[in-house]
Length: 156
Image (tube, rainbow, N blue to C red; front, side, top):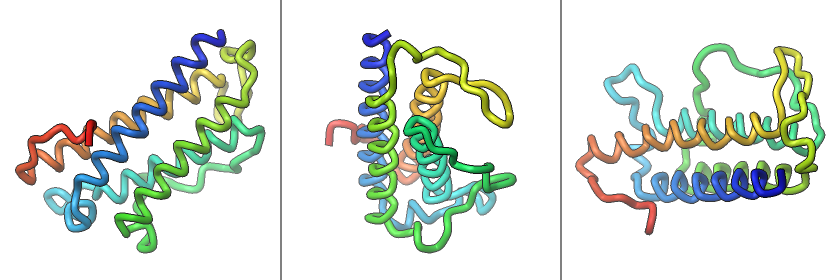
């Protein structure tokens, strides 16, 4: 199980780097833009990623994050809509998840954890962080491409 835990850690580290690189490549104006006027902005879904990461970080650290505080789409508060702040909060949330995962008992990686809305495991929570961030990273890439930026910024 230790090898699986190490692979999860590496996957989350890589996804965090890719996502942060894509955030850095976008201007504040593009991060603020709501595609077509109906879609959420990159600030909005990055805020969602941060909220989910911090909730998972709480769980992995043995804390109860409390009830889920949102209904429907999460919209970023105004104070989050600053590029440097957004990037810092995203990176901090990834580190929080990694700290919790690194401190977890790898022999309990797939043990069931009872939550108010069902069961999960350390493995499932870590996988959610990775998949959820990568899903929204794809949205960042689409925003870049629509704006005419066809470069891959993951090596920047």
